[in-house]
Picture 1 (cartoon, rainbow, N blue to C red):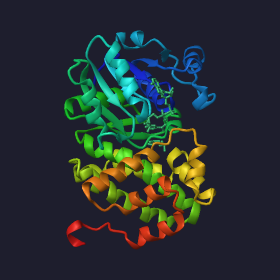
Picture 2: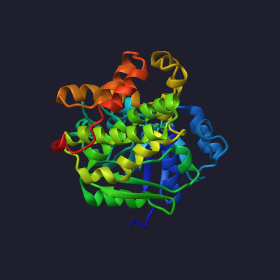
Picture 3: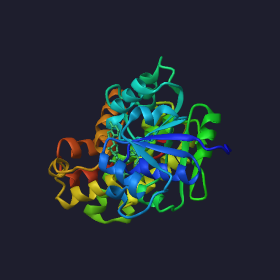
Picture 4: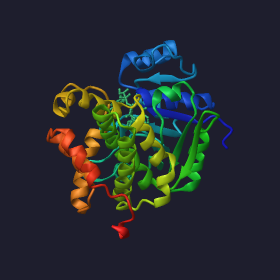
Length: 342
Ligand SMILES: NC(=O)c1ccc[n+]([C@@H]2O[C@H](COP(=O)([O-])OP(=O)(O)OC[C@H]3O[C@@H](n4cnc5c(N)ncnc54)[C@H](O)[C@@H]3O)[C@@H](O)[C@H]2O)c1
Ligand SMILES: O=P(O)(O)OC[C@H](O)CO
Protein backbone atom coordinates (compact mmCIF):
# COMPACT_ATOMS: atom_id res chain seq x y z
CA UNK A 1 0.00 0.00 0.00
CA UNK A 2 1.33 3.46 -0.95
CA UNK A 3 1.61 5.62 2.14
CA UNK A 4 2.48 8.93 0.53
CA UNK A 5 -0.21 11.20 -0.96
CA UNK A 6 -0.70 10.53 -4.69
CA UNK A 7 -1.52 13.44 -7.00
CA UNK A 8 -4.67 12.51 -8.87
CA UNK A 9 -6.37 14.58 -11.55
CA UNK A 10 -9.95 13.82 -12.50
CA UNK A 11 -11.20 14.94 -15.88
CA UNK A 12 -14.86 15.98 -15.63
CA UNK A 13 -16.80 17.42 -12.72
CA UNK A 14 -19.78 15.10 -13.27
CA UNK A 15 -21.44 12.68 -10.90
CA UNK A 16 -18.94 9.83 -11.03
CA UNK A 17 -15.83 12.01 -11.26
CA UNK A 18 -16.96 13.73 -8.08
CA UNK A 19 -17.56 10.54 -6.14
CA UNK A 20 -14.18 9.12 -7.12
CA UNK A 21 -12.59 12.41 -6.12
CA UNK A 22 -14.29 12.02 -2.74
CA UNK A 23 -13.05 8.45 -2.25
CA UNK A 24 -9.48 9.38 -3.18
CA UNK A 25 -9.45 12.53 -1.05
CA UNK A 26 -10.83 10.50 1.89
CA UNK A 27 -7.80 8.22 1.36
CA UNK A 28 -5.34 11.13 1.53
CA UNK A 29 -4.65 11.60 -2.20
CA UNK A 30 -4.25 15.17 -3.46
CA UNK A 31 -7.21 15.47 -5.81
CA UNK A 32 -7.68 18.10 -8.50
CA UNK A 33 -10.72 18.04 -10.79
CA UNK A 34 -10.67 19.52 -14.28
CA UNK A 35 -14.01 20.76 -15.55
CA UNK A 36 -15.62 22.80 -18.28
CA UNK A 37 -18.60 24.02 -16.28
CA UNK A 38 -17.67 27.11 -14.27
CA UNK A 39 -20.57 26.85 -11.79
CA UNK A 40 -19.55 23.29 -10.82
CA UNK A 41 -15.90 24.30 -10.41
CA UNK A 42 -16.87 27.23 -8.17
CA UNK A 43 -19.27 25.08 -6.17
CA UNK A 44 -16.51 22.53 -5.46
CA UNK A 45 -13.89 25.18 -4.56
CA UNK A 46 -16.09 27.59 -2.61
CA UNK A 47 -18.70 25.36 -0.97
CA UNK A 48 -17.30 21.79 -0.93
CA UNK A 49 -20.41 20.83 -2.88
CA UNK A 50 -21.32 19.67 -6.36
CA UNK A 51 -24.94 20.59 -5.81
CA UNK A 52 -26.02 20.09 -9.40
CA UNK A 53 -25.59 16.35 -8.80
CA UNK A 54 -25.67 15.90 -5.04
CA UNK A 55 -27.67 18.79 -3.55
CA UNK A 56 -26.37 19.71 -0.10
CA UNK A 57 -24.21 16.59 0.45
CA UNK A 58 -20.78 17.89 1.39
CA UNK A 59 -17.72 16.46 -0.36
CA UNK A 60 -14.20 16.21 1.06
CA UNK A 61 -12.92 19.75 1.68
CA UNK A 62 -9.49 18.97 0.20
CA UNK A 63 -10.87 18.45 -3.32
CA UNK A 64 -10.02 21.35 -5.62
CA UNK A 65 -11.26 22.06 -9.15
CA UNK A 66 -9.94 24.06 -12.09
CA UNK A 67 -10.80 24.97 -15.68
CA UNK A 68 -7.08 25.19 -16.56
CA UNK A 69 -5.96 21.92 -18.15
CA UNK A 70 -2.25 22.79 -17.88
CA UNK A 71 -2.54 23.38 -14.17
CA UNK A 72 -4.69 20.25 -13.84
CA UNK A 73 -2.03 18.03 -15.42
CA UNK A 74 1.10 19.74 -14.07
CA UNK A 75 1.70 17.40 -11.10
CA UNK A 76 -0.64 14.53 -12.00
CA UNK A 77 0.60 11.01 -11.31
CA UNK A 78 -2.77 9.39 -12.02
CA UNK A 79 -5.38 10.82 -14.40
CA UNK A 80 -8.95 9.60 -14.31
CA UNK A 81 -11.05 9.96 -17.44
CA UNK A 82 -14.34 10.74 -15.69
CA UNK A 83 -16.54 11.83 -18.57
CA UNK A 84 -19.06 9.83 -20.62
CA UNK A 85 -17.75 7.74 -23.53
CA UNK A 86 -18.88 10.31 -26.10
CA UNK A 87 -16.46 12.93 -24.68
CA UNK A 88 -13.37 10.68 -24.63
CA UNK A 89 -11.97 11.76 -28.03
CA UNK A 90 -12.04 15.37 -26.94
CA UNK A 91 -10.71 14.67 -23.44
CA UNK A 92 -7.78 12.52 -24.59
CA UNK A 93 -6.79 14.97 -27.34
CA UNK A 94 -6.77 17.69 -24.68
CA UNK A 95 -4.53 15.61 -22.40
CA UNK A 96 -2.13 14.76 -25.24
CA UNK A 97 -1.88 18.42 -26.20
CA UNK A 98 -1.13 19.61 -22.66
CA UNK A 99 0.57 16.84 -20.65
CA UNK A 100 4.32 17.15 -20.18
CA UNK A 101 5.23 13.91 -18.37
CA UNK A 102 4.07 10.27 -18.16
CA UNK A 103 1.09 9.42 -15.94
CA UNK A 104 -1.20 6.46 -15.20
CA UNK A 105 -4.47 6.76 -17.14
CA UNK A 106 -7.64 5.29 -15.64
CA UNK A 107 -10.85 5.22 -17.64
CA UNK A 108 -14.25 4.94 -15.95
CA UNK A 109 -16.48 5.56 -18.98
CA UNK A 110 -18.66 2.57 -19.80
CA UNK A 111 -18.85 2.11 -23.55
CA UNK A 112 -17.35 0.61 -26.71
CA UNK A 113 -15.55 2.03 -29.72
CA UNK A 114 -18.46 2.81 -32.01
CA UNK A 115 -16.30 3.50 -35.07
CA UNK A 116 -14.12 0.40 -35.00
CA UNK A 117 -16.66 -1.83 -33.18
CA UNK A 118 -13.92 -2.63 -30.72
CA UNK A 119 -12.85 -2.20 -27.11
CA UNK A 120 -12.73 1.31 -25.66
CA UNK A 121 -9.38 0.47 -24.03
CA UNK A 122 -7.91 -0.29 -27.47
CA UNK A 123 -9.12 3.05 -28.75
CA UNK A 124 -7.61 4.82 -25.73
CA UNK A 125 -4.33 2.94 -26.19
CA UNK A 126 -4.33 3.86 -29.88
CA UNK A 127 -4.79 7.54 -29.09
CA UNK A 128 -1.91 7.61 -26.60
CA UNK A 129 0.40 5.49 -28.77
CA UNK A 130 3.72 7.20 -29.50
CA UNK A 131 3.12 10.04 -27.04
CA UNK A 132 5.01 8.81 -23.92
CA UNK A 133 2.19 10.24 -21.81
CA UNK A 134 0.44 7.05 -20.70
CA UNK A 135 2.57 5.17 -18.17
CA UNK A 136 -0.24 2.62 -18.09
CA UNK A 137 -3.87 2.45 -19.21
CA UNK A 138 -6.45 0.84 -16.96
CA UNK A 139 -10.03 1.17 -15.77
CA UNK A 140 -12.26 1.11 -12.72
CA UNK A 141 -15.52 -0.77 -13.25
CA UNK A 142 -18.16 -2.08 -10.88
CA UNK A 143 -21.61 -1.55 -9.39
CA UNK A 144 -21.40 1.99 -8.11
CA UNK A 145 -24.31 4.37 -8.49
CA UNK A 146 -22.83 7.74 -7.66
CA UNK A 147 -25.26 8.84 -4.95
CA UNK A 148 -24.48 5.80 -2.78
CA UNK A 149 -20.72 6.23 -3.07
CA UNK A 150 -20.93 9.89 -2.07
CA UNK A 151 -22.93 8.72 0.98
CA UNK A 152 -20.03 6.35 1.71
CA UNK A 153 -22.16 3.20 1.45
CA UNK A 154 -20.21 -0.04 0.85
CA UNK A 155 -19.18 -0.43 -2.81
CA UNK A 156 -16.88 -2.97 -4.49
CA UNK A 157 -15.28 -2.44 -7.90
CA UNK A 158 -12.55 -3.93 -10.09
CA UNK A 159 -9.26 -2.17 -10.88
CA UNK A 160 -8.49 -3.42 -14.39
CA UNK A 161 -5.05 -3.41 -15.92
CA UNK A 162 -3.04 -5.81 -18.10
CA UNK A 163 -0.24 -5.48 -15.54
CA UNK A 164 -1.36 -6.98 -12.22
CA UNK A 165 1.09 -4.83 -10.25
CA UNK A 166 -0.40 -1.62 -11.69
CA UNK A 167 -3.92 -3.00 -11.11
CA UNK A 168 -2.97 -3.55 -7.44
CA UNK A 169 -1.35 -0.12 -7.09
CA UNK A 170 -4.50 1.58 -8.41
CA UNK A 171 -6.72 -0.70 -6.27
CA UNK A 172 -4.70 0.36 -3.21
CA UNK A 173 -5.12 4.08 -3.74
CA UNK A 174 -8.89 3.64 -4.07
CA UNK A 175 -9.53 1.13 -1.32
CA UNK A 176 -10.84 2.15 2.08
CA UNK A 177 -13.47 0.90 4.51
CA UNK A 178 -16.44 1.77 2.25
CA UNK A 179 -14.90 1.53 -1.26
CA UNK A 180 -13.09 -1.70 -2.08
CA UNK A 181 -11.21 -2.17 -5.35
CA UNK A 182 -9.92 -5.59 -6.37
CA UNK A 183 -7.41 -6.14 -9.19
CA UNK A 184 -8.29 -7.84 -12.49
CA UNK A 185 -6.15 -8.35 -15.59
CA UNK A 186 -9.15 -9.14 -17.81
CA UNK A 187 -9.77 -5.68 -19.23
CA UNK A 188 -11.79 -7.05 -22.16
CA UNK A 189 -14.20 -9.00 -19.94
CA UNK A 190 -14.75 -6.18 -17.45
CA UNK A 191 -15.02 -3.51 -20.13
CA UNK A 192 -17.47 -5.26 -22.45
CA UNK A 193 -19.66 -6.16 -19.47
CA UNK A 194 -19.54 -2.62 -18.07
CA UNK A 195 -20.75 -1.28 -21.42
CA UNK A 196 -23.35 -3.94 -22.30
CA UNK A 197 -25.04 -4.04 -18.90
CA UNK A 198 -26.40 -0.54 -19.63
CA UNK A 199 -28.52 -1.80 -22.54
CA UNK A 200 -29.72 -4.77 -20.48
CA UNK A 201 -30.69 -2.30 -17.73
CA UNK A 202 -32.85 -0.35 -20.21
CA UNK A 203 -34.53 -3.66 -21.11
CA UNK A 204 -35.05 -4.47 -17.42
CA UNK A 205 -36.64 -1.08 -16.74
CA UNK A 206 -38.85 -1.51 -19.76
CA UNK A 207 -39.91 -4.97 -18.69
CA UNK A 208 -40.54 -3.88 -15.09
CA UNK A 209 -42.62 -0.97 -16.34
CA UNK A 210 -44.63 -3.24 -18.61
CA UNK A 211 -45.05 -6.34 -16.45
CA UNK A 212 -43.86 -5.62 -12.91
CA UNK A 213 -42.73 -9.25 -12.81
CA UNK A 214 -39.82 -10.33 -10.59
CA UNK A 215 -39.70 -13.69 -12.39
CA UNK A 216 -39.38 -12.03 -15.79
CA UNK A 217 -36.68 -9.58 -14.58
CA UNK A 218 -34.56 -12.42 -13.20
CA UNK A 219 -34.86 -14.31 -16.49
CA UNK A 220 -33.96 -11.19 -18.44
CA UNK A 221 -30.84 -10.62 -16.31
CA UNK A 222 -29.81 -14.24 -16.85
CA UNK A 223 -30.27 -13.98 -20.61
CA UNK A 224 -28.40 -10.67 -20.53
CA UNK A 225 -25.46 -12.19 -18.66
CA UNK A 226 -25.28 -15.03 -21.16
CA UNK A 227 -25.31 -12.68 -24.18
CA UNK A 228 -22.83 -10.38 -22.48
CA UNK A 229 -20.42 -13.29 -22.11
CA UNK A 230 -21.06 -14.44 -25.69
CA UNK A 231 -20.01 -11.03 -27.02
CA UNK A 232 -17.18 -10.50 -24.53
CA UNK A 233 -15.65 -13.91 -25.25
CA UNK A 234 -15.19 -12.86 -28.86
CA UNK A 235 -12.88 -10.13 -27.50
CA UNK A 236 -10.93 -12.70 -25.48
CA UNK A 237 -12.75 -12.31 -22.13
CA UNK A 238 -12.32 -15.05 -19.54
CA UNK A 239 -15.32 -16.93 -18.16
CA UNK A 240 -14.26 -16.51 -14.51
CA UNK A 241 -14.42 -12.72 -14.99
CA UNK A 242 -18.19 -13.11 -15.25
CA UNK A 243 -18.44 -13.73 -11.50
CA UNK A 244 -16.87 -10.42 -10.48
CA UNK A 245 -18.14 -6.93 -9.53
CA UNK A 246 -17.60 -5.35 -12.96
CA UNK A 247 -19.70 -8.02 -14.67
CA UNK A 248 -22.40 -9.81 -12.67
CA UNK A 249 -22.32 -7.19 -9.92
CA UNK A 250 -22.87 -4.19 -12.15
CA UNK A 251 -25.44 -6.06 -14.25
CA UNK A 252 -27.55 -6.84 -11.16
CA UNK A 253 -27.28 -3.30 -9.82
CA UNK A 254 -28.06 -1.48 -13.04
CA UNK A 255 -30.90 -3.83 -13.98
CA UNK A 256 -32.68 -3.49 -10.64
CA UNK A 257 -31.99 -0.02 -9.28
CA UNK A 258 -34.29 2.95 -9.75
CA UNK A 259 -31.13 5.05 -9.16
CA UNK A 260 -29.78 3.85 -12.54
CA UNK A 261 -30.36 6.23 -15.43
CA UNK A 262 -30.45 3.33 -17.89
CA UNK A 263 -33.02 1.36 -15.90
CA UNK A 264 -35.08 4.55 -15.40
CA UNK A 265 -35.04 5.25 -19.14
CA UNK A 266 -36.52 1.79 -19.75
CA UNK A 267 -39.26 2.50 -17.22
CA UNK A 268 -40.00 5.82 -18.86
CA UNK A 269 -40.36 4.16 -22.27
CA UNK A 270 -42.82 1.69 -20.74
CA UNK A 271 -44.77 4.61 -19.20
CA UNK A 272 -45.00 6.17 -22.66
CA UNK A 273 -46.64 3.07 -24.11
CA UNK A 274 -43.37 1.75 -25.49
CA UNK A 275 -42.72 4.81 -27.66
CA UNK A 276 -38.91 4.91 -27.40
CA UNK A 277 -38.54 7.57 -30.08
CA UNK A 278 -40.71 10.04 -28.18
CA UNK A 279 -38.84 9.44 -24.91
CA UNK A 280 -35.36 9.58 -26.47
CA UNK A 281 -36.17 12.84 -28.28
CA UNK A 282 -36.75 14.59 -24.98
CA UNK A 283 -34.03 12.86 -22.95
CA UNK A 284 -31.10 14.93 -21.65
CA UNK A 285 -29.27 12.80 -19.05
CA UNK A 286 -26.23 10.55 -19.65
CA UNK A 287 -27.78 7.22 -20.74
CA UNK A 288 -25.07 5.24 -22.47
CA UNK A 289 -26.99 2.02 -23.03
CA UNK A 290 -28.70 3.52 -26.09
CA UNK A 291 -25.49 4.02 -28.08
CA UNK A 292 -24.03 0.79 -26.69
CA UNK A 293 -27.06 -1.07 -28.04
CA UNK A 294 -26.27 0.14 -31.57
CA UNK A 295 -22.59 -0.79 -31.28
CA UNK A 296 -23.48 -4.21 -29.80
CA UNK A 297 -25.97 -4.81 -32.62
CA UNK A 298 -23.31 -4.05 -35.22
CA UNK A 299 -20.77 -6.27 -33.45
CA UNK A 300 -23.29 -9.14 -33.31
CA UNK A 301 -23.95 -8.81 -37.04
CA UNK A 302 -20.26 -8.60 -37.84
CA UNK A 303 -19.48 -11.71 -35.77
CA UNK A 304 -22.62 -13.48 -37.00
CA UNK A 305 -23.64 -14.56 -33.49
CA UNK A 306 -27.11 -14.77 -31.97
CA UNK A 307 -27.98 -12.35 -29.17
CA UNK A 308 -31.79 -12.01 -29.25
CA UNK A 309 -31.95 -9.55 -26.34
CA UNK A 310 -29.62 -7.04 -28.00
CA UNK A 311 -31.35 -7.53 -31.36
CA UNK A 312 -34.74 -6.85 -29.78
CA UNK A 313 -33.46 -3.81 -27.91
CA UNK A 314 -32.04 -2.45 -31.16
CA UNK A 315 -35.46 -2.76 -32.81
CA UNK A 316 -37.10 -0.99 -29.87
CA UNK A 317 -34.57 1.84 -29.53
CA UNK A 318 -33.68 2.45 -33.18
CA UNK A 319 -36.71 1.29 -35.19
CA UNK A 320 -39.34 2.29 -32.65
CA UNK A 321 -40.81 -1.22 -32.54
CA UNK A 322 -43.39 -1.72 -29.83
CA UNK A 323 -41.78 -3.63 -26.95
CA UNK A 324 -44.63 -5.95 -25.93
CA UNK A 325 -44.57 -8.54 -28.71
CA UNK A 326 -40.80 -8.41 -28.92
CA UNK A 327 -40.37 -9.02 -25.20
CA UNK A 328 -42.55 -12.12 -25.46
CA UNK A 329 -40.37 -13.63 -28.17
CA UNK A 330 -37.27 -13.06 -26.04
CA UNK A 331 -38.30 -15.62 -23.46
CA UNK A 332 -39.50 -18.11 -26.08
CA UNK A 333 -36.03 -18.01 -27.66
CA UNK A 334 -34.00 -17.96 -24.46
CA UNK A 335 -30.67 -19.76 -24.79
CA UNK A 336 -28.61 -19.76 -21.65
CA UNK A 337 -27.16 -23.26 -21.53
CA UNK A 338 -23.68 -24.26 -22.67
CA UNK A 339 -23.25 -23.86 -26.43
CA UNK A 340 -22.43 -27.54 -26.88
CA UNK A 341 -25.77 -28.50 -25.25
CA UNK A 342 -27.87 -26.43 -27.63
N1 LIG B 1 -22.94 8.17 -12.39
C1 LIG B 1 -22.65 6.94 -11.98
O1 LIG B 1 -23.26 6.41 -11.05
C2 LIG B 1 -21.54 6.17 -12.65
C3 LIG B 1 -21.00 5.07 -11.98
C4 LIG B 1 -19.98 4.36 -12.59
C5 LIG B 1 -19.51 4.75 -13.84
N2 LIG B 1 -20.06 5.81 -14.46
C6 LIG B 1 -19.54 6.15 -15.77
O2 LIG B 1 -18.79 7.34 -15.67
C7 LIG B 1 -18.89 8.08 -16.88
C8 LIG B 1 -19.30 9.51 -16.54
O3 LIG B 1 -20.61 9.42 -16.03
P1 LIG B 1 -21.23 10.53 -15.08
O4 LIG B 1 -22.40 9.91 -14.45
O5 LIG B 1 -20.21 11.12 -14.19
O6 LIG B 1 -21.68 11.59 -16.17
P2 LIG B 1 -22.27 13.03 -15.90
O7 LIG B 1 -23.22 13.30 -17.01
O8 LIG B 1 -22.73 13.15 -14.51
O9 LIG B 1 -21.00 14.01 -16.02
C9 LIG B 1 -20.23 14.11 -17.13
C10 LIG B 1 -19.23 15.23 -16.90
O10 LIG B 1 -18.32 15.25 -18.01
C11 LIG B 1 -18.05 16.60 -18.30
N3 LIG B 1 -17.55 16.70 -19.65
C12 LIG B 1 -18.18 16.39 -20.80
N4 LIG B 1 -17.38 16.63 -21.85
C13 LIG B 1 -16.19 17.10 -21.33
C14 LIG B 1 -14.97 17.50 -21.89
N5 LIG B 1 -14.77 17.46 -23.20
N6 LIG B 1 -13.97 17.90 -21.05
C15 LIG B 1 -14.15 17.90 -19.73
N7 LIG B 1 -15.29 17.55 -19.14
C16 LIG B 1 -16.31 17.13 -19.94
C17 LIG B 1 -19.38 17.31 -18.09
O11 LIG B 1 -19.17 18.67 -17.91
C18 LIG B 1 -19.88 16.62 -16.83
O12 LIG B 1 -19.42 17.31 -15.70
C19 LIG B 1 -19.94 7.37 -17.73
O13 LIG B 1 -19.32 6.63 -18.76
C20 LIG B 1 -20.64 6.44 -16.76
O14 LIG B 1 -21.08 5.23 -17.36
C21 LIG B 1 -21.04 6.55 -13.90
O1 LIG C 1 -26.94 5.51 -13.91
P1 LIG C 1 -26.42 4.53 -14.89
O2 LIG C 1 -27.50 3.66 -15.48
O3 LIG C 1 -25.53 5.18 -15.92
O4 LIG C 1 -25.50 3.49 -14.09
C1 LIG C 1 -24.49 3.99 -13.29
C2 LIG C 1 -23.40 2.97 -13.06
O5 LIG C 1 -22.88 2.49 -14.27
C3 LIG C 1 -23.79 1.85 -12.15
O6 LIG C 1 -22.65 1.10 -11.82
